[in-house]
Amino acid sequence: MMNGALKKRLGAIGLWVLTFILMVVMCVPGLWVVLTAFRPNGEVLAKPPVWIPENPSLLNFAKIFGVGVDQVAIPVPAYFMNSLIIALTSTAVALLIGMSGGYAFARYRFKFKNGMFLGLMLSRTVPGIALSLPVFMIWSRIGLIDAKLGLIIVYVALNVPFTIWLIDGFFRQIPKEMSEAAQVDGCTRWQAFWKIEFPLAKSGIASAGIFAFLTSWNEYALASNLTRSTDSKTLPVGLMDFTAQFTIDWAGMSAMAVIIIIPALILTFLVQKHLIAGLTFGGVKG
Amino acid sequence: MANKPPPFWQREKYTPYILLLPAILTLVFVVLLPLLFSLYTSFTGYRLIRPESLYQWVGLRNYERIFSDGDFWSAFGRTIIFLTIALNVEFLLGLGIALLINKITWGQRTLRTIMMFPMMFSPILVGYQFKFVFNDNIGILNNALQSLGLSDGAIPWLVDKYLANFAIIFAEVWMSTSVFAILLLAGLFAMPRDPLEAAKVDGCTPWQVFRHITLPFLMPFVFIAMTIRSLDVARAYDIVDVMTGGGPAGRTELLWTLIARTGYDNARMGQANAMAYVSIILSIAFTYYFFTKLIAARKYMGGAA
Image (tube, rainbow over all chains, first blue to last red; front, side, top):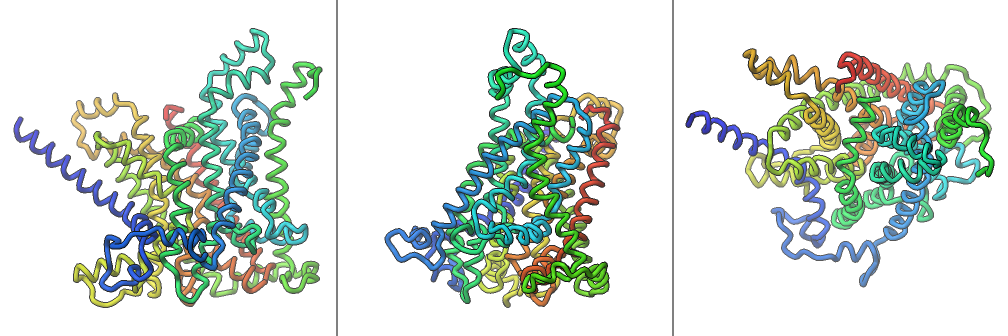
């Protein structure tokens, strides 16, 4: 009995050691970037390295946003606004289209249903860089290069398949009988949808929205080729501006990286439960 | 909307198509038509600097040229090797992590949340993060190795042919292992307990239980993860673009970075579109393969999963 307990204890310690190593590998690279964002530039280049920042400051953030000090050459505030506008607009539109499409897949039987679903998914497999070539050629003819609208349209199309997939899964989990009962009681199908099914699927739809937002927020392959200036450049594209200079401003770049990470971290935290449920239900139960 | 709804049968029949219309229109205009246009372009000698070359039909010459081009084949081969190594490592690590976290009772939710973060990182940030980690002069890795006395020189992680490819695969694995870990963990949670108990009573070893009960049950989840991954394998473009830009001297060039270089930097759009089509077919084949596997596994499980 004693021996078994000891074995169990050792096993538990082994598990924790493995988990600890795993977490270090997962967290240290990101943590290093975050720490660097708070260092003065001299400390970044110091030899031997300074592990924990000795003089942490917000100077790097002040510099990229031009608050109190001169702004660095890279117009981060403009990029930030572009990213926000493009991501929010494309998410809102993709959600509307996705709700309507997801509802159709979840609640109706129709011809070519499986074929259409496969078609939606296949459209998502096209590599961003491969899609960027024809879109670049067409957009440059109709004046959508270096325009926020140009990116918004592309991101809506990028997000629609996945949004439909997720929302389809969430609607499927709501028993059909509920809206049927409401219709028997005199609701139209439209009213039944808004009063019964939509409120129940709301949190799932919200997480589909967060996922779409992050896709747009993080996208690079298309954005880097369809944007040119502060009119439309987004944060991920702007990050590369730092490397175009002869000496890389690691501290400034890290501060900008932190700005890009923060929304992703917060939103991931909010969405995690629904995302896993949505992916597995959508995928396994079909 | 209309005050007087059409007859019931008519509504039911056409509603799904009307509901799907916005999605179909968007995808036709932003994905399908551009792809048809790029298919056409791949048969022309189109160069960005000479607009009239868009109408210069050259037949299969672009394809002949890329298929006889050494740079194309080495980028293609490197992409295949890159994907094979990355996906297998991601699957094995993800499986290990899922089994590990499944065993842990205290702090499991926190661990799961931390696991989600790399999934949500912008690939461009993952690339930047590892460009910084692997930097030969100020990177944390070389600094750590030197502080521990394991190495005295600066190891050129992103310059050496093998090390640079290793660094890129490492970044890719770091970014995408959690897709496998999280989905397989969801699979482990959904697993019925009875067969496990029965197998233990019958005297199966833990390995036999894993091999013949746990693993088959997890297969649909593996295929979901593979399908999801196949949708975004091309995100590796972002990582490589930041970390090495395909260099030094094309040593880390993947198919996707080669497309960008040919199309935008060298302005040979026709040829770039021909390559893009190869990459599209690669992605579609990949997705289709895992999707059919998923359907088959789902049938095999009898919808139990």
